[in-house]
Length: 304
Figure 1 (cartoon, rainbow, N blue to C red):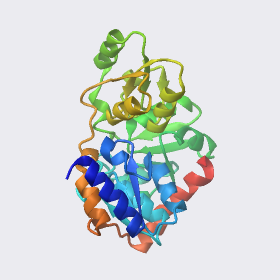
Figure 2 (figure 1 turned 180 degrees about the horizontal axis):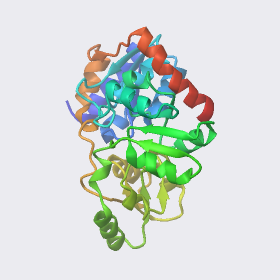
Figure 3 (figure 1 turned 45 degrees about the vertical axis):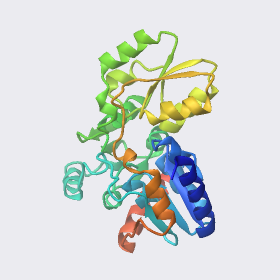
């Protein structure tokens, strides 16, 4: 089959079988084109909650499918590729988090949404890269234990000097591949471009950006800006998607190593097979689901 033939068959099957296909923004272009909705992990979960379809296919990584299941217990949730995980989500285990909570008993435990369902059961509130500042400024607690991304945590801490932050040494192995030299090289190569960076990047990178924001924030900024050139400091799929969506503008990757291999595990064939009824169905014990849902509910209440 050609890419187009496979896409057409997926479109036919998902309509026939009532399957909602969700694709994270870091997915391949041919997958984004057949998805019903593309966005970041939190937006995908909310879209699944609102959808009429009873079956949801997540083209992303495992914690994203878990988040959908947490919010949509009545729906069948599938992960397009069972091996697609998130190294950051898996960096911190419950035993270590319990030890940290004992060390900082008065701290509010804020979990980046890039965490496993099991870890979320031990956290007080969940945050996203776009909502973390708003949520953590609204909580009454003055001490914050932020897990697991130290770079995002430090970026938010810089915005909230009235709070005391505690961190663990974790983060996204993709976004830390670019350093100061990469930022300076990109600036020199593209002097007329605005530099947009994700807060998961190293502090020396975000300090030199013209705009720092979530994947969705970077995308919207680039689309709406009057500027015609941009250096994109996040996963390189965003460069490709923007090139398709705004062909009159130019987009340059900050670093050629900004590739998430877990996201790239999902292929169009995986999506086709899942629409045929194959694929791993996500199942969470109800006790785990309810315990993990508490910190997500608080995120929704505080962050909208």
